[in-house]
Image 1 (cartoon, helix red, strand yellow):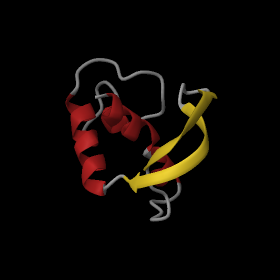
Image 2 (tube, helix red, strand yellow):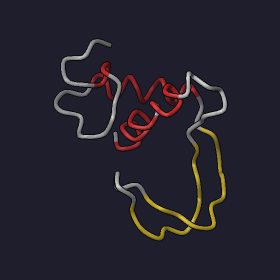
Image 3 (cartoon, rainbow, N blue to C red):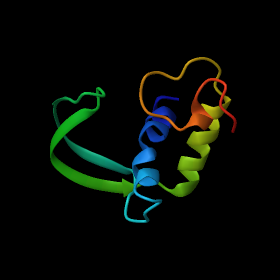
Length: 86
C-alpha cells in the first residue's frame, strides 16, 4: 500500500507535464542523507536501478482507488480523494 500511495502521490508530475513520455517514476539506489518536505528520502550517489512499468502504475492506482478512508495530505488526483469518482 505504501508504494502504491507514493506512486499515486507523484504521478501528477507526469500529468502536470502534459502527459510527457519523458517523465517516469524510477527505482533508485543511493545513500540517504535526510528527508524532504514530503518526508521523501534525500539521497546522494544516486544510481538508477529500474523504471516503473505503466502496468505497475495502473495497478497502484487501482489499489489506492479501492482503499477506504482519507488518503493523506499530498496532492492526489480527484479519483483518489474521498468521494472521487474512479
